[in-house]
Image 1 (cartoon, rainbow, N blue to C red):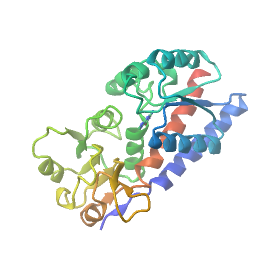
Image 2: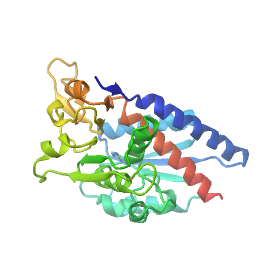
Image 3: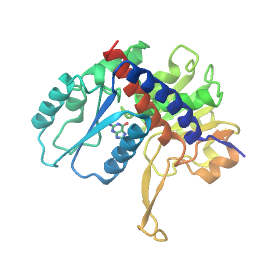
Image 4: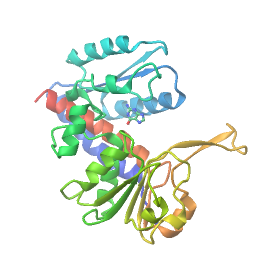
Length: 293
Ligand code: GUN
């Protein structure tokens, strides 16, 4: 029976440290501020931005949310971003994905000032991450997974890790972090995706599985080595006639089955999600510290 990794508790200890750094900034007369923007009315984005706003307020970080209509053009959004980039009161900028299909996310992310890119999506920050240069920003979700592993004393050195999913937000940076030289890296990483052969077999050999491909309950108990660590990043909405809303959220891991075999496992919710927010708050304070040093 696996140990359940309490993401809420670990996030709380990150928040404690962040709150004291906010206090230190305030002593110097600096009010850290995070700018959120979302385009259109994507229901999940509304929920996520709302949670991030509430956590900012709790930690004493100022926030402002700019909601733009669905028909906003790429040029209009770029103009807004250019204004926020030069606004000295704003230390972090977060453009919530997904954006409407007529706006190219890569163009938007590469026009947020790298110094205010608390998401770590700007090509300069992606490059620094891959090179192991600590002066950039680490993307929040993979950064949060590393913090979970560290807090749980899960050895990455020499471990065989399988990352499921090659997305720019989680899979790719996760692979870079786990394989990096250093105390939270030094793993041998296999990045699996939709065209990978023998995924089940590769998973069965892994000491650490990071599931981030967005397929509901893809990782079954039979795919997990006894005692392995299983981190579930997935958030998938599936139909459920017995639920009031007609649907419910599940992860990329079949939790009950995995629980029987794994050594440690994240619950979902209450695992990776709280860590993503904790890392965003920490990155915002880091941005404010760097911009006012
Ligand atoms: N959409 C899903 N995850 C994220 C994230 O970490 N940052 C932003 N900006 N959008 C997202």
